[in-house]
Length: 261
Image (cartoon, rainbow, N blue to C red; front, top):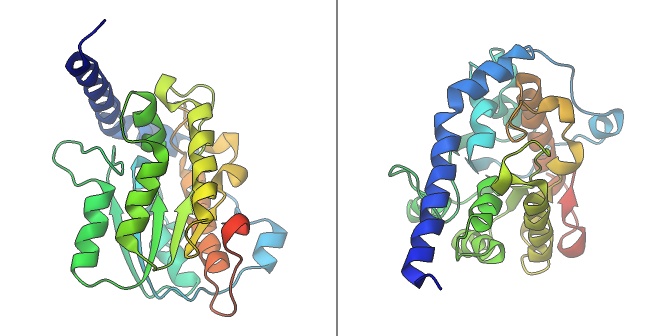
């Protein structure tokens, strides 16, 4: 029977490898993303467009992993109006801070970069009061699959405990069958399920159902990241989901009905 410390080292090594692969593949992801073209059709359906509105959120901190890299990048989205800060502005957000890093997760760190908890703690320490968009989860599912002792539910709780009672929109996740072992779709679905369960405990929490909107054609070959049209769609849809989650007028449902589109 292997010694516990050996098992732990293997798990840590596995997660380090996952994070390294995520970060080192950025240039490959850009090349594949722009190959699909950098201009796509407006992603909103007629129903979504008709239901578009302004948000009560005037400030947003967006914390994300590599699946947010293309949201505010001239390489992925050369047309500035398609980038997510502009999309947030369209729904009424006045101040946006993008806290995005490849290989970021809630618990693990990569090459000295702060994890998501540390980013949120730093903003809270500075007295930030506003809304949060958390585009996390892909690496959470993968790190747990690779052997992390910190489970999915605990990771969600850690972020929610830091943020407190401020409005939080989580973006759920999806991968395709071609994604590598630890990024398998089954793990992503488990993460999404745990997010929905957490809504029952946190009345200030909403979830944007990206997994329900994303199209297969928006993924690049790794089955994890997105093409330029995919990022253009993701930027617009996240911003509109924020308006639906925390509208300027009225309130959206919480608890078991916390998922927005």
